[in-house]
Amino acid sequence: ESEVLLAKTLDKEREDFYKSNIPIGEATYQHFKHLLKLRHQGKPIAYIIGRKEFWSLSFKVNENVLIPRPETEHLVECCLSLMKVTNSYKLLELGTGSGIISIALAKENPNLKITAVDISSKALELANENALSHNINNIVFKKSNWFDNITEQNFDFIISNPPYVDKTQLTTKEKVNLKYEPEIALFSMDSGKSALLQIIHRSHLFLNQGGILITEHSYDQKEYCQNQMKKRGFTNIKTFNDLNSHPRVSMGSKI
Image: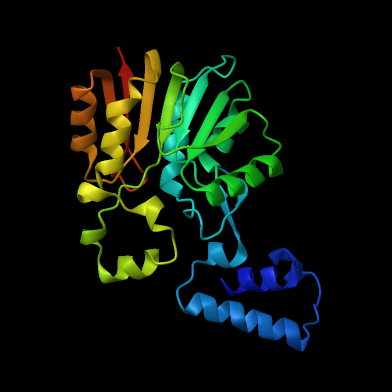
């Protein structure tokens, strides 16, 4: 981590440290010490350097959005596995944050027509920046509280990594680890299930026949998501595990 912070301070790649001696002035040294202090205080390194890798792509991040997690790559993998790259699909992402999911999908399938929404204007601003930096032009970013400002009702896919953490169940260590990230993107009411319920119960109104809902959730919310999908008439309901063998992504098809 020290090398990463030093690279940020010097605006160099880490590999450059081993190629030649790089002089460091007093101001640079003091700035480096400041970054080390921030990290020692618990600030995530992604927020300190302002970047995080996801799907082998580099994204700009700040404290207005969640830090991308490896588990969320399973959401992208699941969605791509259901698509033919040559086909054009309409996809809605709910709670796009920094835009990583939609941008990763757009990179893999340029024929996608994506609408990505978020309730946070600052998150949407960052998502737009990330899309531009990756030369993505098939995503429309829109401000909306879930489906509230969505007028189209003919999506082939709805995908989301919503807030699903139950704030009341966090350990002291978890509270410390999450304190820098936006609460609105992490926590949900009703034991972490409120956002999931809203998404599952309204998705069928916005999906084509045969359209698919895919959502990330906590390891202990598998049965809840599956049961709610059944109540809403979804079929072919499946759940996929993450790299730690925890249930992480569930999907269902609209009849």
